[in-house]
Structures are given as C-alpha cells and as structure tokens.
Length: 176
Picture 1 (cartoon, rainbow, N blue to C red):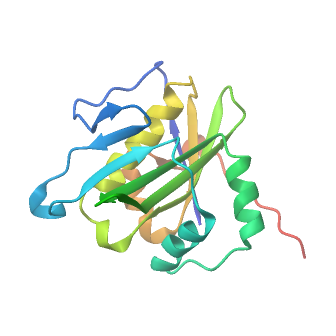
Picture 2 (picture 1 turned 90 degrees about the horizontal axis):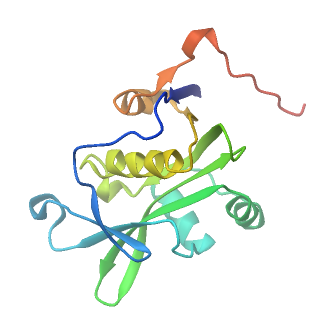
C-alpha cells in the first residue's frame, strides 16, 4: 500500500467538465452511449447501501471477504459514503463505492474505492473521485489522503494525489 495525499489551498476546486445533473438525492451522470450503451448512471451520497450487494461488488474485483457486521459499522461511522448506481428498468444496481473518514475540520481519508470491472477504464472512476473530492471540499476539508495498492497509484496521481508529500511517511501498527 502507498499513502497518497492531496492538499488544497483554496476553499473549492472547480472542474470545468460537467460531471452530472443534480436531481434530488441523485446526481445523474452524463455518459457516452458508445461506451455505456443505453444505461443511466447516477452518483449518490444518500442512497442506502445493502452490505450484501456491497460485498458482491467487492468480490467482482477480487477483494477478500470482510465480516458484514464490521462493514456495517464502518459505513455507520464514515464521514461520507458515496456510491455509483446503474439504473435499469425499475431497479438500481450498485456499480461503484467509496467512503471517507474525517476529523470534520481539516482532514479526510478516502477508503474502499471500488468500481465494477464492467465499468472500469471508461472515465467513471475519475469522475467519481472528483465527486468525492468535491463533496469533501464543500465541507471545507483541506487535506485528503488515501491508501492505494501499487497498481493504481498512477490512477490517483492523474487526479492530483502525490505520494508522501514533504517527506511525510504513513505509519502503521498491526497487532502481533
């Protein structure tokens, strides 16, 4: 794992690209029909997350199973829980997820970023991370960190995250 950080010096960071249309609890994402077909996709911070559906999403990318009671607890104690949904027919399907913890003033750490493999490499993950960052910035969080596996470090670098800024090193403690 690599510890990455993004610092902000201004109150908000704006992106000139329109990511979505806001509509109540759902932020509908404008997608390229050539890449996504006729599906409709939205981001949400209010949609209820079914832990079984979340674990199926995590399974789809090869993550190890986690105890559901701990997953529930992590969701309940997160500062921000965001999700991506594919809307088909009358049902929504969870296709992406991330959460953040925070001190509610200065710092937030993004955890558990996952996009279903069928929707990877299409720009949706970048748009979703911008969505997460914008949500945190709208609450005046100026320091956003995350932990990344080595194979996705370049993905986060493209979004402005830098490894170990100013010689800061993440420290870890594990029980023996």
